[in-house]
Length: 214
Image 1 (cartoon, rainbow, N blue to C red):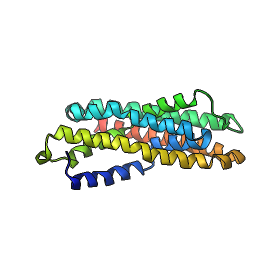
Image 2: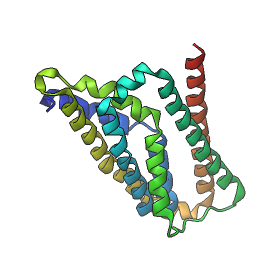
Image 3: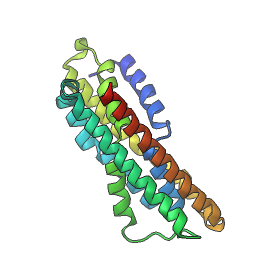
């Protein structure tokens, strides 16, 4: 098990990551404002579920594999960038096509939100980078097998995503009524979300291309 001091330091670093605006937070806030708490919460559940792949992959040696084969990591980053671009273009199209975006939740919204949250988190290079680069920093051989410590930290990281994300989802859903009375804000929000997603996608793809060219 990690020492108490290292564990507390890890919690602080993890909180900083979760409070940093990114694709996961943007999608949760968007779902909460447009469709209410339930779809937004399912988006958060998708983020957490991605950990069932991320945590074992990192603990079982993904970090070593990615260090040995940098092109694999570049491929993961590129895939994430393309997916973010796809989400951004969809949001911009929704903004441009309709004068008023509907706030009514559809039966498939929760399921779609879950899988979108799952895919976005799984392909988010920031999450993968954090786990690969930082999890080992909060371990010490004197505290037992390093892989067990990394497993504990990784599971903790994903579990804590649930309360953090739920707060964002609830907060966004609380202003849904105001958004419904001000449809211009909803269109602006969709356009802003799309612009942010496309911007993130371009940054990821540009940094990936720059790294490969170096």
